[in-house]
Length: 301
Image (cartoon, rainbow, N blue to C red):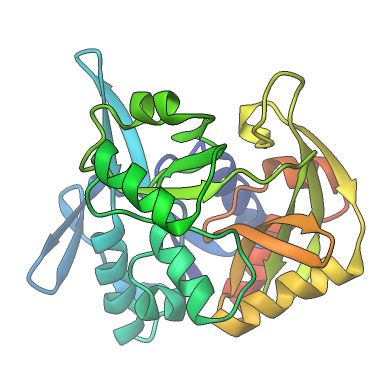
């Protein structure tokens, strides 16, 4: 009897909700566990007050390993990279397949900074990216001059997503404003790429499910659907083959590949290892992304 372990932030989040719907339709059992309910002991994993009986699961799926809560008017952020790596290792050692599990083991750190290094190591065309250990405004200005990076720049907090923590700076005054109180923050710096839109390709088990075009609203320069960007169906087989080749090259079972179109091809903006697909299913109503992911898990990846 198949049974799938689902771990995420909230059972009401779109990805987990859709996964549970499809599993139910296929009469496959599943359990959901919230990241915040997990505790780790000596070779044990606890959900609230109960040990997780891993032997009853045939595969596991993780939604985004980060969340935030508001406490006393202060936003607290939880990044669960270490726990994700341990949990993946633990399950794989018990022969329980994990979506993208082999990738998580090979690349345990997958924030924006580390992704830029993965792209470079694997000759994947991407936006030139810099990271500084010390975000001192004086040191950064000196290094930007040496490296030949010019304004406008895009600064991204390395461990955020969905368009959050991304800033455009047009001059040194703007740079200083963004870096204030962020000297030790994990940031990346990129040249601003002029664009009218970007594209999200969902790839599952080596095959593209389709493309979603994202266009920023007037007065905004971010194309993210989560920030109100307009979305539409887009067809370009060459772009789909490009996304598939990236997943094959770095060993991904499931991903949302975000790209810019340029004159000579494509540039990868970033890879979403826990892709949200609410907007995608909206513009591709005949494509059941959740069912494709369930089939991936059902066939033990």
